[in-house]
Length: 380
Image (cartoon, rainbow, N blue to C red; front, side):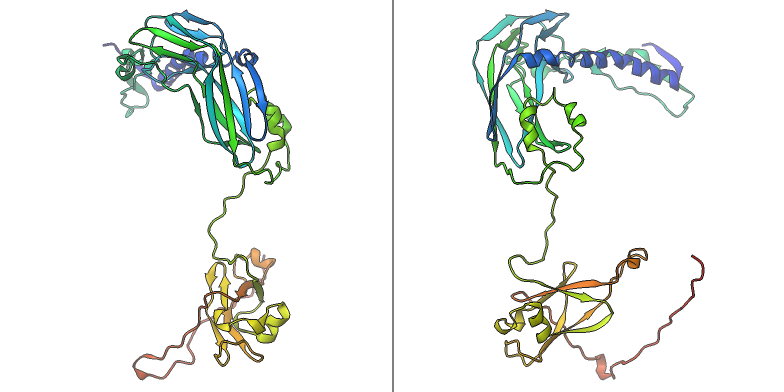
C-alpha cells in the first residue's frame, strides 16, 4: 500500500483531474445526436399519439466496449455492462398522460462479443481532515475499480431487461415533456453475446388531453426553447401545446354553486346586517331559512347572533349581528388598505354566538383596566 502526504489543494485538483476521462467519455456520447435523428422516421403525429420508427446502425467492439451508430447515450451503472442506448424528449399535450408501446419490426442481430467491461466504480476515500494543511491519502484507493455486479454477470439473461422506459412528465418553461429511453442493444454476460434490434416502431399515446388550458407564457422566449429543438423529437408539433402549469390549489371551505355575499367592514365592533340589507344585495330573503345562514372570514367560520323570532322565516326587522374587525396586517400594507371582508350565504351550517354566565354567581364584569401608550411620531 502506498501512502503519501499532500496538501489539501493538491489532493482536490488530483481527484478532479482523475474524473475528467469519465466526463469526457460521457460528453463524447452526446456529440452524434444528429446521426441518431437521421435514423428516425416519423409515422404519425396528432393530439392522440406520436409514432416513429428507429433503426440503429452497425455494432462494433472496441476495447471491451460496444458502440452502435445512432445510440448516443451510455448506461453507466457501477458494476453493470456499459451499453449505449438512445434517449430523447417527447412533448405532451396539456394535461395528457403518456403511455408507450414498442413493436420490433426488423430482425434481432446476435453477435459473440465475449466479456464486456463493467462500468468502473470509484472507491471512497478514507481521509483524516483534522489537519487541513496536510492529509495522508492512499494512492491505490483512488484507482477506478472494474468490479462486476454478480447479480448481473452471473445470470444467464440479457441486460437490460426492458426495451424502453418513459419518465414522469416535467416542464421545460411552458412545454410539458417526458423522457423516452430506448434500449435496442442488450448483453448476456453468461454467453458473451449481444443482441441488437435492427428496427423498431415506437408509439407514444396521449390520453386525457385538455386543449382548453392556459396559453403559453407571456414572455415567450423562443430562443430558449429553440435550444431544445434537437432534443424534443416532436418539437414542431409541440408549438401548439405550450401552456403554463395549472396552479396547485388547496382545499377550500368556500361554498360553490350557491350565491355568496360580501360584507365590507371598516371599523372594529358589533355589526348588524338587516333583512333589508341582504334583500338590497340580491339575496332571496323571503325564501330562505335564517337558521341556515353561514358566515366566513379567511376560511374560518364566524359566530353570529340572529336577531329574530325564531320561526325559521326571515322577516322584515330581523338581522344578523356579529363582531367584525378592520383590516389588520403589516404597517406597510395598512397604508393602502383598511377594509376587511366577511362572507355570508344561506343553505349552510350556522355558527351561533352563545351566552355564558359568570362563575360562582358573581356579578358580571362590565369594565376592566388597561394601559394604552400614545406617542407622537414626528420623525420618519
